[in-house]
Every structure is written in C-alpha cells, then in structure tokens.
Length: 357
View 1: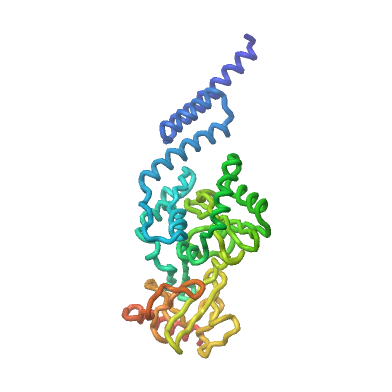
View 2 (view 1 turned 180 degrees about the vertical axis):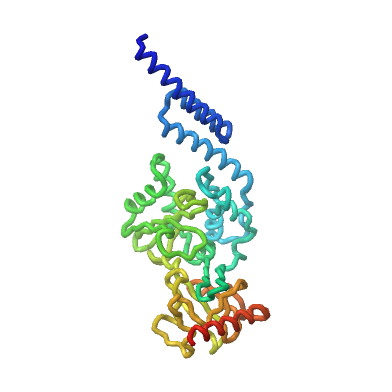
C-alpha cells in the first residue's frame, strides 16, 4: 500500500470515528444511534444517515403517541356523516421528532379525549386584553371543525361509489402521496376541479382542511383531508369523498357572525376575514348608534373585550359568535353581572371620551 493509500485509509477511519463518537455522545434514543453508527461505518452519505435516523425516531415517537392516546370506541348514535368526520378527527396521523406536538399536543391526540363531538360549542372565543390600551385588545374566534363539516357534507350512494373507486386508485399508486392522488383522481374522473388548503388564506376553523373539489355528472364532491398533526406541513388524515351542494361549500371558513339582543333589539355583525374586520348588519348598513360600526381597528367601539368574553356596552349583554347564522344555541344572551366587568366597560367608555377630547 502506498503512502497516499495509507493516508486515505487513515482519513476514512478518522472520519468514521468522528461520526460515531458524535452520534454516541448525543441524547438520541439507542435505536437511532445504532442506525446512525451503522450508516457511518458503511460510509453511507450523511443526508441518507440523517433521513434514516429521523424515520426511526418518527416511528418510535408515533408508537409512543398512539399508546398515550388510545383509540375511542365507536361513536354511538351518530349519523353516517357525523361518524365519518369524528373518525377523521381522531385518526392517528402519526408523530414526528421535528414537530411541536411533544410540547403543545397534536390535534388527533386531543380529539381522542372528546366524549361527544356533538356537544361541543359551534364557536369558541378567546380574547387578548391590552390593559394599557383597550383599543389594541384582540378577539380570536375559532369555528368548531366537526360542526362546520357536518353541516356541509353528505354521504350519498354516488359519494360512496366514488370512495370505492378512489380506494382502488390509491392501491394502484402506492408511491404517490395523497394530495397527488387526490388531484389526479379528480381530474381523471371529474371536471372543474380545484385544490384548497385552508392554512393558505384567512381561516377561522380550529383545524386545517385540505381538499380537492370536483364536479361529476352535474353533482359536486370533495376529496377531504383534515390536519391532525402539529405542524401543518404534515399529519393529514387519509382522504375521504363526500358530496356537497356546491363547489364553494367549504369556502366560507373565514366567515363569522356576531349577535346580541333579541327581537327588535337584535343586532348582528359579520366578518369575511376570520374576524379581523366586522361589519354592522352587512357592509352597507348604517347603524343608528355610530359606535356599532367598526373603527379603524376593525372592531366596533361598543364592543368591550374582557377576559370573560366580548360584551355589548349599551346593554351589558354577551356577544355570541358563529358561522352562517348558526350560533352556540343560547336561548337568551348572557347578562353582564360581574362587577369587575362592568367596571371595565365604564373604564373603556372613559378612555374613549379622553381620546376624543
């Protein structure tokens, strides 16, 4: 062996030793270390070693996540649509060592704790109160994905037949990812198709949807996935086909409604951008009380944002939120009976008076 060859061999083994030592000193699980060390000894490219180690880590983490969130029993007394949507919401979409699910939880794990999806409120409201400057306080409205989908999706003989065909198409294309299959299938079997991921636009749903809509024989369908993971780049359910009444059936996911009062005193507002801007009874309506119209921040001055919810200042009633005219089903708005909340309203009114002075 020449001096040059000797040097190359020594460099090779030194490089392998450095890789193995670095892997061994890491806090990675034993199984991941073993794969990495074997790859280093076999002189596998670094990218391939990392990919294999991450895949092993993902598999281990997925197994652990599944054990921590056991699958629920069948959803009794659910309609076919309710049952399918609930099944998708609780589908194990896996776990990845690079996602944030370990710290914040994954949707599918949290959903497996739900006893009855039908009993959940249609909308959930969170507030971020700025004590120093109430005008900067924020309202975040989340629409419940279960209710939103159940109100819009249908399982029909036509959708079930298409579902069988898609399952066959999936078996015939084992190397394609789901989204590619969804788009190809829709283009092959139907027309006027399009792809939507609700994460890419204004969205008020509490979970991301990804779907392909298409038309066939004068009827409309969606191939739907629900994001059940942590990071939106992965963790989607298996696709399922539903019939819908129109191609835009799921496209009102950023539309919100707010209301308070009853009878002739009923007031309502709507938003088409997930609650960033609110319009009094439609964008062209002019309220008698100018404070019912949104200010530059998009929120009506008569709305008082507190840690307990959003209230209508003139009456002290709670403002209810929903979508498509559907609210949380309260027979009558809640009255403001908390003294501290009333004080917040008075303080808010005083602040506005000072700002106008």
